[in-house]
Image 1 (cartoon, helix red, strand yellow):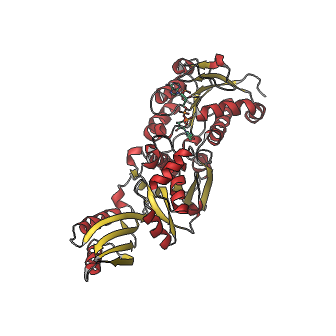
Image 2 (tube, helix red, strand yellow):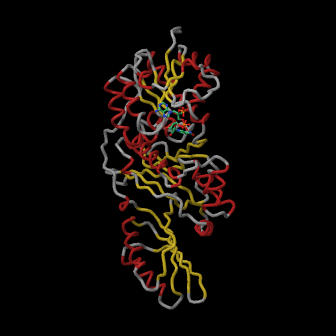
Amino acid sequence: MRTRPLKVALLGCGVVGSEVARIMTTHADDLTARIGAPVELAGVAVRRPSKVRAGIDPALVTTDATALVKRGDIDVVVEVIGGIEPARTLITTAFEHGASVVSANKALLAQDGAALHAAAEEHGRDLYYEAAVAGAIPLIRPLRESLAGDKINRVMGIVNGTTNFILDKMDSTGAGYQEALDEATALGYAEADPTADVEAFDAAAKAAILAGIAFHTRVRLDDVYREGMTEVTAADFASAKGMGCTIKLLALCERAADGGSVTARVHPAMIPLTHPLASVRGAYNAVFVESDAAGQLMFYGPGAGGSPTASAVLGDLVAVCRNKLGGATGPGESAYTQLPVSPMGDVVTRYHISLDVADKPGVLAQVATVFAEHGVSIDTVRQSGKDGEASLVVVTHRASDASLAGTVEALRGLDTVRGVSSIMRVEGE
Ligand SMILES: NC(=O)c1ccc[n+]([C@@H]2O[C@H](COP(=O)([O-])OP(=O)(O)OC[C@H]3O[C@@H](n4cnc5c(N)ncnc54)[C@H](OP(=O)(O)O)[C@@H]3O)[C@@H](O)[C@H]2O)c1
């Protein structure tokens, strides 16, 4: 057992960072035994130095994060500041000055993962980021290491707890979107500005990271098709229930059947109640992985929160410290397949479309003709109406998103179609 401690610099001491510091202190003996050397908190960079931080020696606190990562005696930098800058520059500076990095920063990894991996490799350092996707749930390492001998074809997950809480509320109480969002905000599940969650920017960043690791290719945030969940209505849930489904905001990463390309997308979708993801309640996350040899795997747990996220950070810290003591580095970026990312129009799935139409003879035939003309085959149609107005709910067989988009555009051009009130993809069948 080495007695000289490994030195850790903590960048950020907020929701996650404060829990990382707490666990480093309370579990110090266990961490020492597992790593084979003690770990010492050597500095804590924050924005507001005067804030009281329980359990943190004020002498360790600094506002000069750059000087901290440049010290030269730091073994591991834990970056839990978030955002693009200064996090990106601090991480690359840490590599240049001898430290490996553990980060929870999904936004940065999704945008600049390739460059950060290249910088880590250039300097012979580790870059670990288990906490960046689905909080406490072990996912990056299982995909990167445990399944390294398999071939992953699909990753489908609920990777944002805020939106799952809102959708679950709508499902279980019949509440509308705004009412469910207000409750999520009051309970602390949604931030004052919920845009990153409800418009699915957060989930899209996670989808980019997952797709890249699962398919050994580079998928950037811009490659991910993104649709938020602000337009999901109580009527959509009623319709979903009628089909034996519920609605979830899903991140879907898929390898094309011919293996020549991949897709990554985030949007609300109906999934059958029998699918394992349908039973993921409240703010929990879950990711369903399909691979050639293992078959179907499900990873489930708390996707956010200080303590759960710190659990993932600490796991990475132990791994990086062990690597350091062994004079090695862990697996770097694996992007050898260089598969192109196909546009959303190429995605093939089923659709649930609600239309408001005139209630008169021939309308159904007219609508069916538009679907047929665009090569979209209808599975079921449900019609209800009175007083000259009617609603049509059409569920299709599998079709490309481009064909569906063409169909919807043509439907909107029909005199007898008053509006297309909802379009939702149907997944997980
Ligand atoms: N919260 C979660 O549940 C969760 C889950 C998974 C991943 N993450 C990721 O973890 C990271 C941290 O999230 P968080 O929720 O802990 O954020 P947070 O509570 O806002 O904490 C951010 C910390 O960074 C410090 N900071 C901000 N700008 C800085 C700068 N320029 N120099 C030095 N320190 C600076 C802040 O200092 P002050 O304390 O002085 O303000 C604060 O301590 C993000 O990348 C986030 O995406 C969070």
